[in-house]
Length: 365
Image 1 (cartoon, one colour):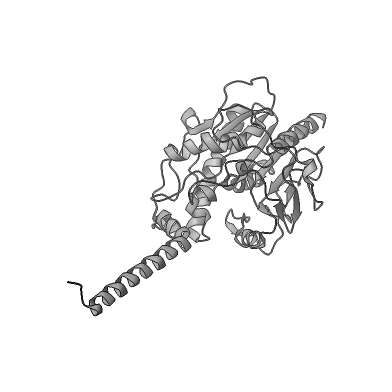
Image 2: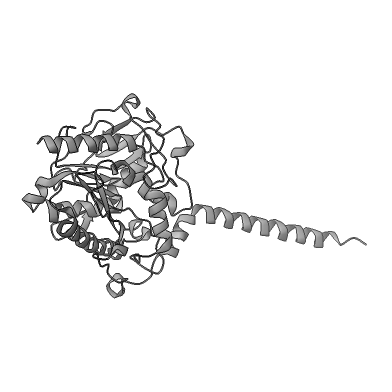
């Protein structure tokens, strides 16, 4: 015997309502997923009352990702400041031995961002209590303090390197993303104030880093035959106007008291890696020496290059890059991975060649 029609209609209505609610919830999760993940990564503890992980001892080899013991036939050094590899969660600042963060450095960051410099000099890369990815997604005062706190480790590592490892050799400073911001302060407070160090500096490469154009700590690189200069850039893809404006609106730089403050309305510095200069001239793809996706390669292995793949031009202090055609140069991974330095380097070969030019210029000088 079939059910009465009013009961069938009520069941149909309930089923339709449940499906509608499920659809709305699914759409909400998709739309607000980033906010949900970001909230989950919030330590939810004021930085002022936060108990950070133990400090590194840079006399201990375990406090370094990379610390070579010999010259290896190279007469220059590279001091490399790693980008963010720690997502966040319970801590504002990462433990030195955080496993996932360490694996990401070894598998992704080192092959793509240290790789261009292994033929230029010995690489010294300190572990440091890096500010979490979460701290880079918000302008809260807590997050700024976590990033300022990370600088003390980088400063101590650099001083230890200069006192115990450098031996008067020429050196480069390389920083990526968060590491680039920390490198900017290192240049201002350690290098620019010491004429002997400034004289030994070959160049500073600050990748995916906003630097002030009106008061850089050292002269910007305006030609390839120049040494002792600053090459800093932050990139977006051409046509992504909102991303460029967001980048400038959220950009933080150091003030004289060592605090992170908004760059705006000051201008940003833009170095074009294809041209090897701070310049508003467009760089066509025919000049591009090569992008590389070196993720997962063994340390020291040379990646395959994809040359003439992207063009780039500086506009309004931002490097605007044509979208790469190859799927090898598209961001991948989860929400957090897509907000870190990407697992490829669009200017790998260009940076490699530029660093060698500047080392030759330093020797000639």
